[in-house]
Image (cartoon, rainbow, N blue to C red):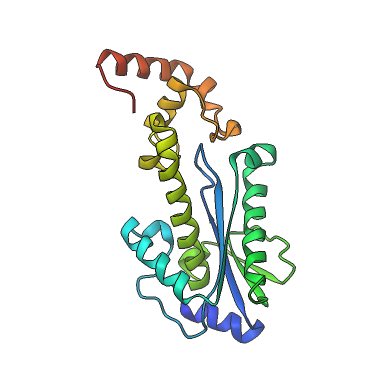
Length: 220
């Protein structure tokens, strides 16, 4: 349950508070997306919570509220290519930094609240909050913007690469997704550094594909 008092105390101690969070660290494909949000001090958004605890419909409705009510926000992403070139943690933190830089174009926060336990250099003080998207309203708002943005990206990419089922699993490593990568090979948006299962689970995947074809299932 969110604690609106958490952000109030942070504002009392520092001034303007910005929350930041990311979505998409675990998927096999697509970008990792980060968002940063500064909410009005007295704003209470009914139903706001960690984006993972919300339905898609609720996230979509909250997304519009946050964009309308936020004093400032930023949304940035690191592509699959960048993730492979560096690593997922570095790519996630880089996206967070760029999202905060977008916020700074409107106003400069005195403190950045970061979901997780990895501090980074935002050019202003930061505080790590473990499971912060379930504690800080500012972080929760950022988690919603990041999650909705990334889900929309994956739904759009589904039309370009329909065989993988991105609209359904959003790139996460479901059995169906792994089998599709084995059957069709990686797409241009797959994270090559996340595909070690192709060798590790080759026998299981070959058996699953043979069973699928024997059953006469159409490709996803």
